Length: 155
Image 1 (cartoon, rainbow, N blue to C red):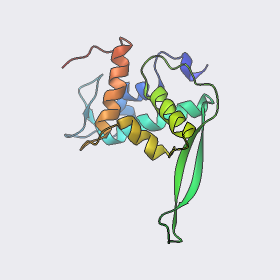
Image 2: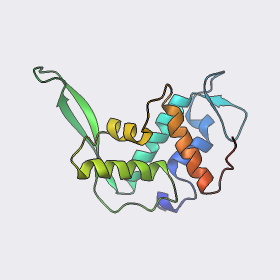
Image 3: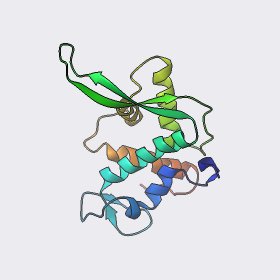
Image 4: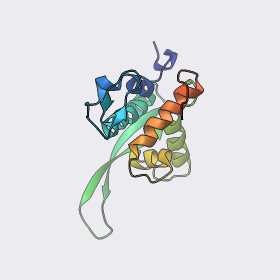
């Protein structure tokens, strides 16, 4: 069974089962959707983002490449960065998903020969500076669930 055949994307499943993927916290975390618990929101968002990227790789839509890059112009020190390279047919993710947003953004950066590193792609998906950027990732997936009528938006 392909991942796209499921009712939920991997990032949505992680959000809906957040207590299984992120450590519980007492305060300043993310309130779980399916229980009264609270988890480390940053950790949860990282798991959701990783799942979205790896799901696209599993579906054959992208390849992850590890590259060495020099830090500064006149320095011999280098750092490793992970890049996203679109390679195949885009999977048919159901609706407004983190998986499709990451794949679309990586494809745009790759097409214009921009910085298609994981860091740049995720930053572009966030599209704003926030004190807690992990909240944007979680909100993105929540809105995707709402547009698919799995969640009722409440303000």
